[in-house]
Length: 70
Ligand SMILES: [Zn+2]
Image (cartoon, rainbow, N blue to C red; front, side):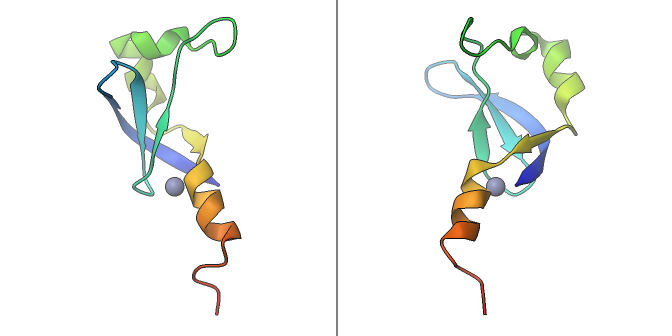
């Protein structure tokens, strides 16, 4: 499920984590050549991504678990 990025923070290993509008978080690692996100290590790059949407895996899990369906 697409969720807006509301901000970023770093975890205990200094990896960047996106804060999503739904309250979940998602790692946005820059690990070339597997995951290339050079923008995440730059303050400006992160600022530019705020408001963009990420596919939230946690939301999809909750949805598929059947919770909240009447
Ligand atoms: Zn979510």
